[in-house]
Amino acid sequence: MSEINGKVLKHGEQTRTMHWVHMIAFIILALTGIGFYFDIGFIAGIFGGEANSSLVHRWAGVVFTVGPALYILLNFERFARFMNTIATITKDDIGWLKTMGGYIPFLKGEVPPQDKYNAGQKMLGHLIIIGCLLMILTGFPMWLWRAVVPAAFLAFCYNIHFWVAVILILAIAGHFFLAAIHPKSRVEFASMMMDGYIDAEISAHHNEKWFNSLQEVKE
Amino acid sequence: MSIFKEKSVFTRRQFLIGSGMLAATAVITGIFAKFGFDAYAVSQDYIAKRAAGLYNLDEKMAIRKSHENPEILQIYKDFLSPGEVSPVSEKAHHLLHTKYGREIPAMIEELHAHRHDAA
Image 1 (cartoon, chains in turn blue, brown):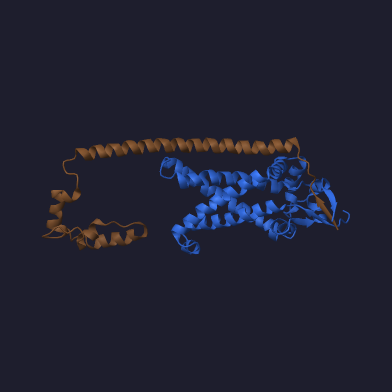
Image 2 (cartoon, helix red, strand yellow):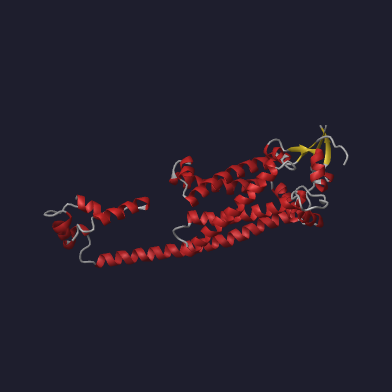
């Protein structure tokens, strides 16, 4: 690989803002949710007691829903490109999954060139979208219709809400580890959380197919 | 230093996948919301009928006010506040006021401790 000088704009301003908003809402929801399930007084105390904690959970749920919805409506093109990227599964993605992107030591083999998001990130994208939809679709009835829908339906919502929360919290923990801690990929952290840029050479290596489609703009 | 950016090309495939995803979400949410609103409507209808039934029953009762019920007055005179009718007596407060949530175990213990008092 030749030396490439420069940087790549990977995540625009609105995408980063949406990611921040969604992340903060998710942390609050996860913390308060864990507090309810395990009846941890300390967590409820952080949010001003059990009743306030419940109120914070519900309104954080509103932010969790409205944030991405606004982003999608105001940036439909960006959203459509993202959906197209994660919905496109090629032989290279299957190849990435077979070698797990080189992240697992005993899985040897050549890692095929990847798109803007690698196969693992594409899977996480699907998981987060489906997971968030399920959380929203079960969360609001538990809040607004709790007195009027059949008890069995409400219990069904509680179960789905709980298990999807477990899956999402584990998935996001993995996402955080790979994006912010793992030495091979932690450069992604500054790109999404700070200025949106990533080193061109790293991008050309990790996201070769996407990098080749970019245009060079002189500063 | 060079800056690399995405080309501003928006393909038909990208548009169709993006709008398809939005449409699918709208349909799923719509079906789910329809179920919820239907259940809400059925519930409201039931609540209205139940309330009407209770009012109807109440209108047919001979004694319609608990503080005028001779049996209740007798319980106060004989047991809850001996010799008089005092609804906020100490015994009435302990026996007739319930507890909720984390106060329940303490209430059960208290009832056990006084279980021979009523005899």
